[in-house]
Length: 639
Image (cartoon, rainbow, N blue to C red):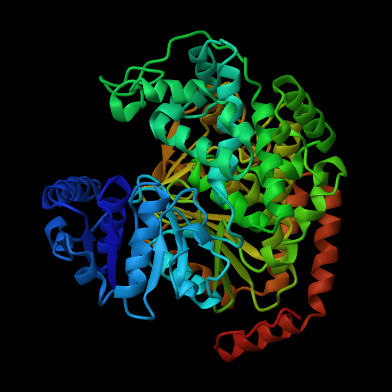
């Protein structure tokens, strides 16, 4: 595919790099050769870093051969299949470029803008063939950030949106569709309301370092003011100005950021903003002060998300994905809203609106009336068609389930929900005899990631209970469940593997419970399940010391049943069991073993005799005996 990127700044050259990495022929356009030379130099530096980290297989110079430079826009775009405009957020400039693109591109070329805020209809104002104009909003840096918002203008054809959606997946990104041409789309719409609130709090004269220290203490990589510095205070200021013009003049009440920008304090890019960046990332040593309640920010996020839902701008799932990937968060407003007390959200928004005299913080109708949950459920059936955090496939009578949250496949609330749903789907599926659980990439699972904010002990208790109950179903499902462990199986990942019937591992597998070193305990059943598998003494050692053990040590402990070379050998082991072991026998045997360990032996023996009697009447027993004497492989049907 021939791709032209117009504008070679931070976003432009990053987009060009991504397109070239994925085998596209790219032309990078700007107004001067020296500007383009600087951009190519930055692309080369980035490719060198990616190569050093092992993120790309090709040599940087081979990728660079697919990028050409041009200062002649008309000549560059005449044969382009896709043109991506990435010039500064100046409406007149963008309009002029698209007017020229309309004249000089072939009729079926897709014309995309990387605008972060401006309406598509405004940019395409002077374009005759508006059906091919679409938003394609990358996030900075494009090489690393996974999200791309695809924005449908009022005249954009569905075919163009779908084609761009597929292109986005082909370049290794996660696309979300914005169905309505609204300022800021999804991420920046939500972020603008946050920025306004944070700025208004600042203008009260608070100590921003203490706020950032508090947010860091919650496990977030940056506090709100450090993050604005990192993004660029000029970008924040320009966004708020645009929102003041397009949505509400109240966005213009943030004067402090604009004042800093006028004084040349742009944040990281200028070396100074709230903090001094000249020596790298600033050190924040202030005391922690919860001047800003994180739950107030979450309430604002929910409010903005509900506006998008009420206006049919995007689906709940796309809003959640966009905020998580675009704002580098472990959870989005949809997850928060599903577990939130809407009366509390409503009260918080009313208080914030009254305190700062800002009507845009007033709760939406769906929050006021309690109907937000209905909006969230509107996509329920569609969401269930596929999994976000699991990759599921079948090989014969084996269901292969891969935790799909690379690199560490951390377990969040969504994954628990989806695993629970998958187990329900597989429960009575007689075409499946064995479930093989592993992780995408090089690791099984590095443990738990909290995918919803925990505000009190009761919420945390419910998250713990969710994990325990979901994992326990692995011991009850009438299938043989095998954990194939590679790389890390730590914390919650270790617990997940412990609930499986069998554990096989590669030599590089590492098991461990880090919880006691963090002030926690293994709370998804680790303290109860592990002693039953390896004994109290060894369980005590692993949990109380937080030591990690290798696959070889785990095999000696009896924790691992078998060491295999790779995934192919693990799958062959699973397929052998799926064909050689009678499914009803396996179902009753695993239940006898698990339940029998919890009851007096006389009760267990009685359960065993009942199971034997049941099996005596099965077709599988007859088939097993006939196959044995005929010296052939049995064909069990689970009957």
